[in-house]
Image (cartoon, rainbow, N blue to C red; front, side, top):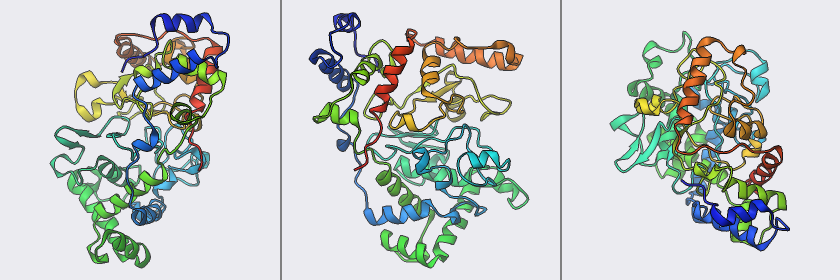
Length: 407
């Protein structure tokens, strides 16, 4: 996706119109956003079965659905962190408490990637899931770790299946886990799904309500019914109904002068919309960014090969899916490994990755990995210009307009 403000309009903006609220600036920002694929949020909302969504919310909170019974989906997707967990890397099985409590407790298995928020995951067109796109809708159907045994033609439902069978995430690695379950094969996953579905079938309350919502008997509940319910809940609770930017574009809402100027940077000089396009501010494609890797990484030894882990294509090494920006001001820390704690630094590293780089504090292996990520990023056809502190502040003001408005 291209960035969309250029030419004489950009010159006039940089030169400075008397007011950031001037009609030219307002209309330029509106046109740039629409040209970059922004549409009214209510036009991409997916229909929801309300009864199924309510049951899905109960399942989302139920510890019955972790193999060892010590956590739920909600453990890592908390309202107070805007559907994330506030941690650089999630703490999965064996953890205690919520948010920072899980980190400070010193127990629990570390999940080597940052928890993704859930906003907009159920909207029309959102068809690529997880940092590495390991669940993706293609012209040939849903591609996932399940291969030809994909459990649904809905990519969100398929994506919902995976955390429940991930070692360290919701399946603890200890003597209680049989060796064949540790292999994370489709067969092993099926066994775990059957155990979890059995628990719900045996729960008179949960099983009865889920069976009613799915129009079947409790004894016939399968894990796909559970996944459908959780997906329905995600579609409903985390639907993006309104933002100040949506009101500005398609209603009679107004933005501050600072936010308007930030929007012009977003769609112009900052080149943010070259990746952060569309209604949720993501092209759902894969790109390299030279962010420091925090933690041991998906591939171990402080390495995460990103998209390559799903595609096995060497060209995809160090690529990660563009994160949507809805509620981005509330979902720190940032990057696939949670390496950056605030938005200002995040923006700064985007445009000037070596500004605060201290190679002397890195090991030789880390420096080689840093260089590889930098080279992957440098291969982009165009690179953004550095931004001033004022421009970064304006950009953050614009990103604040992407916060959801409670109705």
